[in-house]
Image 1 (tube, helix red, strand yellow):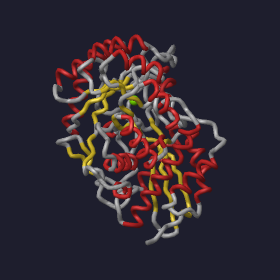
Image 2: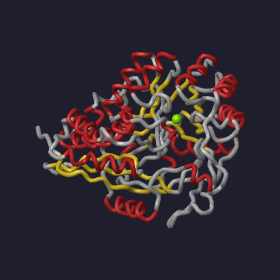
Image 3: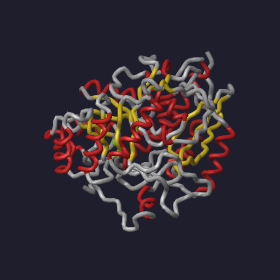
Image 4: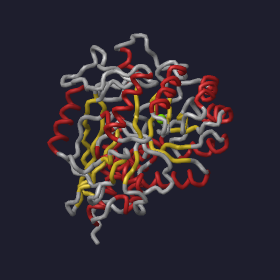
Length: 429
Ligand SMILES: [Mg+2]
């Protein structure tokens, strides 16, 4: 069997159109940034991956890349060691505070994960196996995703529009009726069986009203609410009381394990997180304080597929549920998330995805197929991740990156175009 060795690492930033989705920090900008990674090898196999495209992430990827030359795509311990050594002294960075605090462990994990996914894709292409088979085998051939509902405006605020931006056709969603209509369109289009509302935007009781409206409109769909730690402990306790029996989990109502623990003791609702347990070093405190019942994994910052499988084992050990987090992503990451989810036996919940909000992609169409009866994505059948790069699209979206001027994600500055006095404040309610 061949063991391709890495001869070149190409990191290409892209910018993709993004609608004005509201969250605790502000509003999505007209462009979201991603990085496409190509690991080229001496056998002609190219491993693909996708990472954040903000400048600190790009700098870290480019700093670590030369250390990978000559490495076998099967030597994942070597990969981990080389990246960790190269990035040992970097300043911790995170795409957004919405995935918890920046730490060196997460920053290094982001780079390891980005390259590790590409190594797995190359392994699959070299052996003819799917990534899910390399991860231990598929326990499911279709991965259920949830409808990711957002309060949103119809248009970006004046001053935010980039050179080629065209508004999408979703309109606004600013009240319970708007959220129900958005959910209906998502369910009609994709068949999603679980519904998640991104909260932390409006008065918490108004968001609870939206959950009650969703419950009335979709009596059989599990519901989730994620205020991104934008509520105080007292607000969290009060709203949790109100929503008991209505949610499959309440995600990060408040910040930090101590506060989450306090809320957890006051409610029967399971608390979930992708903010207070986002790295292995944060797990002991969460266990000690019994602050969470469900962890949302994310291979992009936990350190890749193998780290995500380790996390799954820890969740199993402590009786925690396991779900999956999403930031805006393209088809390479959707394939990666789907292969990983297919290979994790104790993934108990439908995964999050931003796919319905993304209108542009770098992969050739056809490989990512939805079962629109169940809101599930079929595990791609080709070798590796099963997706192919569309080099014309990559070039166009890289040009869009060069032209758009966005270099880091900054939802707060985007919000200030509409509300000049807007400040980041946690908790806001
Ligand atoms: Mg979350």
